[in-house]
Amino acid sequence: MSKTRVAIICGGRSSEHEISCISAGGILAGIDRTKYEPILIGITQQGDWVLLPNDYALSISNGALPHVDPSAPAVVADIAGLSSQGKNLDIDIIFPVLHGPYGEDGTIQGFCEMADIAYVGSGVLASSVAMDKSFAKPIFAAAGIKVAEGFVVTKEEWAKDKSACAKRIATLGYPLFVKPARGGSSRGTHKVHNADELEKAITDTHSFDRKAIIENAVVGKEIECAVLEFDGAVQASVVGEIKISDSFEFYDFEAKYLDGATSIELPAPIPAQASKEIQEKAIKAFVALGCAGLARVDFFYTANGEIIINELNTMPGFTPTSVFPKMWAATGKNYTEIISALLTSALTRTNGVLGN
Ligand SMILES: Nc1ncnc2c1ncn2[C@@H]1O[C@H](COP(=O)(O)OP(=O)(O)O)[C@@H](O)[C@H]1O
Ligand SMILES: [Mg+2]
Image (cartoon, rainbow, N blue to C red; front, side, top):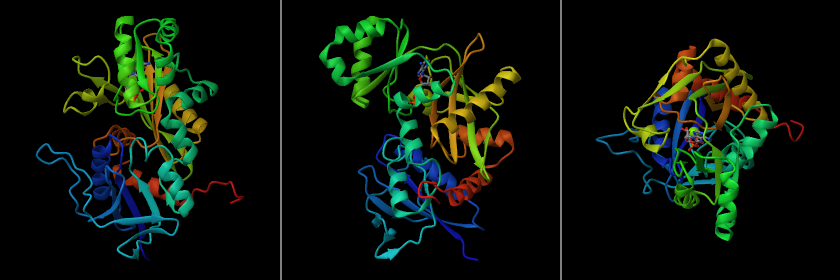
């Protein structure tokens, strides 16, 4: 029997280009080669698609992060599928290992739909909604999952009347968080302690996204739960607590990517009942957004036992040492098994919109 041909697509235009490459390297090494034949495709930082050799360097070497080489042979992506150097690559499944805008946000998913190629993970709508926290939060709230109080201030609103915006923001009370609605990796996210710090934070956030979310600062543990579909059944992993070194005020970019700044405690040191509720809420959030395949759902757990959802990521970091695979390892599923589960569910899923 011929093997299923899987295009692992990595890199991309977002600020998470390098992390995506590292994730792809992990998947290339971990994929079950008895069933699947991986084809590595890179999207350069400029947005060009290229074919990369399977032994392309995708790990950190001598402190240098991997990236997609723009001089590699071009890949043509159109509704006839993917081809390179005049040859169709005969792709059965696309695994878009892309984080952030132009990858995790429904854009590549839309391409896969139009080209009629099966793909790993959530569809167009769930991917777009999860990417924009200002849309995801009201959906979580409607599903009965608590969210931090807050609202959006756009660049235009801010430019038009700063003092009216600041007045409205003050009603939330300080400290508060200012962050891009469509951000990632904590870029452009600020903890604002008082009104004097507000302007600088908002201006910076608006340099990442014209939509800034202003939110009450939640005091609590950061608890994450991984969700995965196994043969059509949605399952939640053991929950973990993100432990950040004391020198960081919150889980910011440096804390996320500096060696040794963060670790995950598995299972999270919280009461069993709270863990169970978080798992239930993670699945509820996954279903509420209409997700498919996988998600990592991030919560706060406060000292008085409140569970507040922070965000849902439809393509979480997927390197072998990322939180998502670690949470599954603690649940008894290894890296190769979770990749196979994702590829199986990609092939069996249908949209159900055209009566199929
Ligand atoms: N409302 C909030 N209360 C407390 N901490 C927050 C809040 N919003 C964000 N943070 C902190 O900032 C980090 C990044 O914010 P998040 O919304 O998860 O954005 P990203 O998509 O960049 O991960 C969180 O992990 C948390 O440490
Ligand atoms: Mg986050």
